[in-house]
Length: 305
Ligand code: PMV
Image (tube, rainbow, N blue to C red; front, top):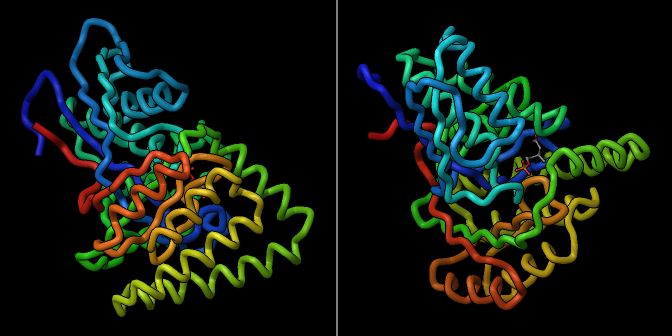
């Protein structure tokens, strides 16, 4: 895969969570899909180490972890980050950025990383974003496609139907995943009995969703996405803007719609029959959101020429 080179390019996809954000932090299984909005990183050998693009603590951490992995603390790299993935809106930009940086630097120094190594390193970087990441974002960035993910178990691929059309609606409201995870922790700590019931209901929902995916029953899948949205509402992580986009999508003919990612702003996702696509796109616009028709990315982190 690697040639002797003075630079290496790698890219990683964003994601939407179809089932299980927040519940996955508590050990429940979740379903996520990689989307073809990508973070592209080019790493060059250089006289000094510097980052072109946006610099955050996560980017610094990814750089440090990657340089340690290639045992080249004294080597310098110039890292260029380009992205068409909106940041801080629940589309997995942190994991995509970290995994692409690590892969590009490893590639530059011809160090081969397994998927599992790259996952673990990306997860370390995610800890700069919030203290208790479940690992779902790194898992989907590294693997691509659709995955069933559970803490302590890892990622398993899930088969998607060809006519699986998702529309993302971006409220444009940036928020911190860490703050939302903390909000759920405080909710759950005070009401362990309520949390237990919500988790139980969520588990039944996601197990039915897996069956619906296997059977190609998109109507059932959409309905279950609506149920999942209701549970996230109960946890207190949706908000008025997200709900507006969710309801606008359903009104416009989506089979189901829910917030996706940490919530408190950010994005929602709708499962849409092809013939209703333009209506849902228009509905999201009318409700004040930015619609993104996001094709599924079958590939995770990859090297580019
Ligand atoms: O980073 P976001 O906003 O896409 O959220 C990731 C999903 C959470 O369940 C909220 C957090 C996690 O680590 O699983």
